[in-house]
Length: 312
Ligand SMILES: [Zn+2]
Image (cartoon, rainbow, N blue to C red; front, side, top):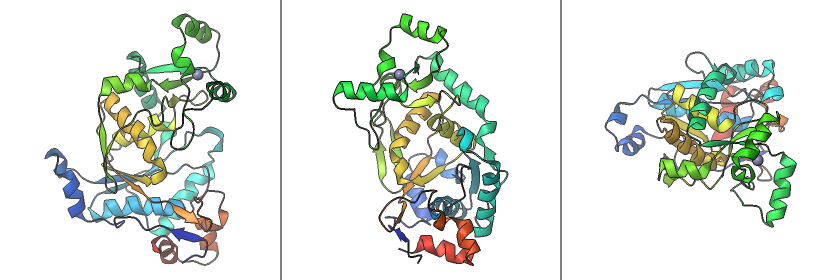
């Protein structure tokens, strides 16, 4: 095992059996004929490290163990941090590890029209509102409130622009001020009603729209945002099983809500444990020593690198 890596073993084996799949699948006869389709969705803003390999390997194993399809999606809407060399680097690393995907990789940057259409559908029903706040204004509002409303990872948006009168909103829109579109989580909850999602590790989870509050669905700078793009693309690529790190478990509440609002199917989820460094911190792209390219240059074989994520 690599000395710098400690990995918490998941509660279910990464390569879970068809039995497990069928057990969770028994709710719907239609789903029992479903072809398993998974995806690995890195951002081309750096090279892959061991944490990515774990995520890729989980998605790859779920698909291959079920005779299904494993897809690659480049989540490349994060503007200036995306670099052309990283698309190729990610694909090289995956191929070297033997985690070959099916078909062509999808680039989110080619899907902007689909995200705009989804946003428009929400806008027509009054489920999003323009937010003119700067980061600084949001911080001031949190301070004014005394205690910022806490989400699982960060304080949630205080709802300032949701309360704007329509006349003030029109003035601001007319002035050319930059704005983001935020989900009106209260209206969304009312429209969608109670929702759940199935996680292969944690079981059935009830959706709590307050967890992340009024999230941004279209950023000021790029016209879309992670939560909207990922939901639209999971449906577009007909993903049956979404596997990803457990740090995204709270995001799944928003994603399930968006699926309901947009009339999209709900995939099964598997939120896997994250790889941690010696101090128990999450591996970051900054941890260059654990980049796959670096390990390869040090003479490690693909089997040795894969063994690092299997060691527990
Ligand atoms: Zn605002």
